Length: 76
Image 1: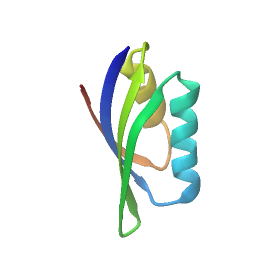
Image 2: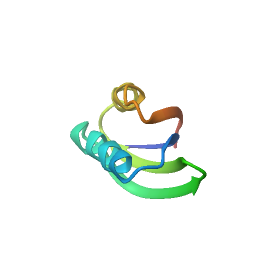
Image 3: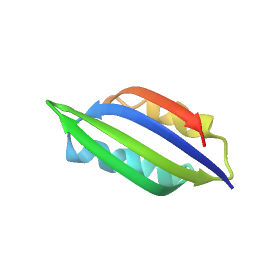
Image 4: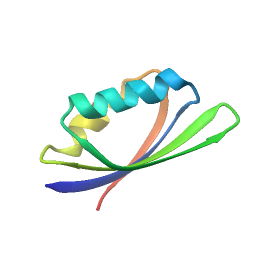
């Protein structure tokens, strides 16, 4: 299983985090660790995930979300 890390910047709304977590689950990724910091009206979320699937499948879906502004990822 591969381990991935990425950080995203999104609108600070409760439903935004719920949608992000739902996309992560539906794409076959498991959350190992998550840290969220808020500043003004933005949320900065750092995720560590595990999966057999390629991270590009998840990044493509998250980047389509209206409330997600930027995504920075690295392979751990």
